[in-house]
Figure 1 (cartoon, rainbow, N blue to C red):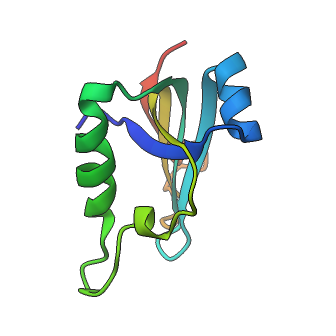
Figure 2: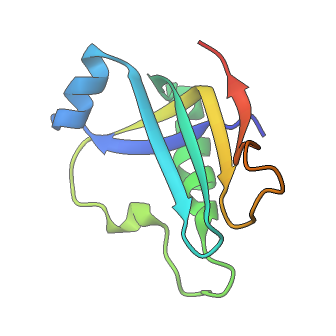
Length: 117
C-alpha cells in the first residue's frame, strides 16, 4: 500500500555496516517475461521491535507462489546469526513497461510514481 520494501540482513556483514554508516539504498526488481521493472531508492531504517513479528513472519511469509503449496518462507532457509529486519521507504519509485511500443517515439516508458528528493 505504501510502497515500502522489507528485507533482512545479518549483523556484522558489509551490508549491515554500510547501512549503519549511510542509511540509503536503491533496488531494482525485474520481470523479464513481462519486460517490466520497478526501481526504488530511499531511506533505509531498522524495523521497530514492536513491528518485528508482523514484518518478518507475516509480510515476508506472504510471498509464497500461488502454484506451490509446499513452498516455505525464505526465513526458514537462513543460516544461524543475528538477523536485523530493515525497511526501505522510497523517496523515488519508478515503474517501467518496455513490452509495448509507444506510438510516439518520444513517449516515456517510465512512470514516476514517487519522484521526491
